[in-house]
Length: 337
Image (cartoon, rainbow, N blue to C red; front, side):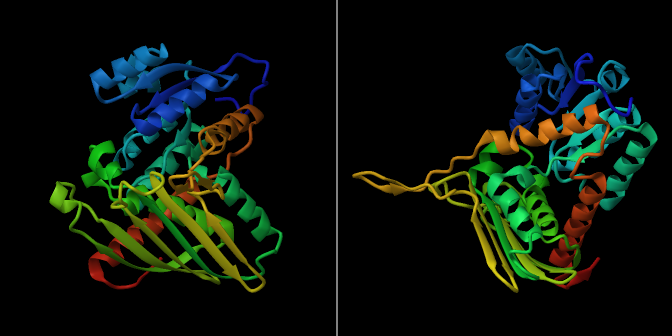
């Protein structure tokens, strides 16, 4: 792989590994990008690979090695289930591809290190898709914190939950994950990024029962206390949000510092609609922010020959925190990193 490319050169050729709900986001982003040509779609399922390939008019395969061996493919994005990131990431990075990888980087720190080692050997760029960094309210909060408007950070709170339809209807593999693996990566990354601090100790508690009664063996809800370098934070995620909630997610962040407070209601965005029948607060997520800007950033970095944000090392740190949370859930003890 070359260190950088001229924008007038031939388009970067891309492959999308994973053709599920968020894999579809990847596919649309690559087809939209003027400097990218999507040439291959992969799914473990022959039926899914074929239907998605035919939908978008792109060649499809169920053979990862076929993508790794194709020297014309420059970049690969991976949107497989949480627990299925390591194999394709290692394979593509060792083949010298640039890789955009969904969160979490992997479900063990050992696998994260395998991915980092593969990136070093192959020479391609690796970026984690912590896409909420580009969400306008959160990006603006980062600018305020960096400008000193908050003063010294003291305490933070973040909640990201999903309607119960996500584990019961959307994700066939939900029982192999949980709200802590599916949602906490966003919160851990956001807190560490916003405050520019690292988590040093965690204590977590969770509850099971509702989803188990529906055949999904995972936590209904998990809460974790995080001790950072010079601040404390509480994060929580649930997979049992009622279907009647105004959007598919419940997403809020509060930051308190020595000089101020920042509050973000990410699932409302300050919009209210009052009719003769009801008051609603619609969720209007701009796909430009989270479904386009991270992909654009990744391609810009490849073309310009610079390292992307959301690095593999940051992905490793998030998984280290997640592993500690898992240990705390099992032992009911605080765990130091």
